[in-house]
Length: 339
Image 1 (cartoon, one colour):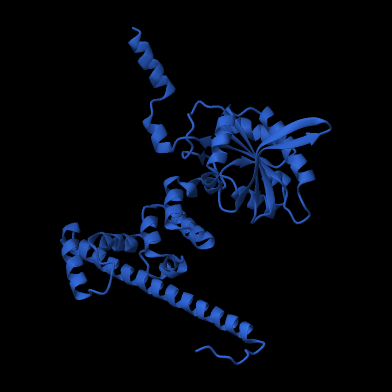
Image 2 (image 1 turned 180 degrees about the horizontal axis):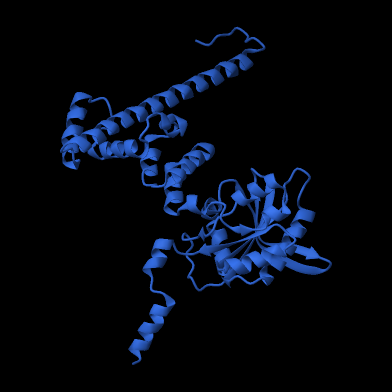
């Protein structure tokens, strides 16, 4: 039966205040329960590691142990033979239990942790953990970034940011870059020109933004600039919502040439002058090429007056590239056929 009494004037405010506390407490309970679970799994894994080192505790024993644990604790999920193997890997990857909390491993869902176990390098694992917590990555996103070796590519583009930007801004801008960019999600033949790649990137904009990195927003493709009666068109223009800066992207098929930086620097200068607002950080440019000499890039960047960087882009993942025959192999095969 509805209450016909009028509500106090501060009722809504009180309801919201209590609701916030309920949600906060529930979140804390969930985090605490998750942490307890991760620590339990670590303990089980450490016991299995110890037994394996001392006797015949190979994988063949785990199915029996999993069945016995499920019968003993029918209301507890997670006691499969596969999960027991993951627990053992967890204890091997983090030998000290205290490191689970120090590195925030126990703040991640177990599904994320099992994905991280495929990362061999400890520093890379810590980087992925930090990104998961900072950006609330899903398990699928984490799998994608690990598969494309993002930790090894972060901040890797050759740039002149350190020379032209103040130290803090230069460091932030450098973090936006990768080398190479893996655009394996594009249905584009490796021999297509940059306009075809550019079009495909826009068609698959969600995947493109994910590969560029967290915080990028798409502004436009073939963005028109009119300067003193002359028309110019920017290949791709993005805005980074966390750093508050425009990022001009230029695509070129083939090897890097120094003259490419002249046009990119021009675009950066115009965007910085016309679109950048007082709260915004300096506009930066990124030239993506399919091949480059690092020495040539460094000399060219040294004479550029605009903050720009150069990175490669791959249309196929590295493992597939390695599986394909090289141009020299194909030429030898063709020569052999003609003999």
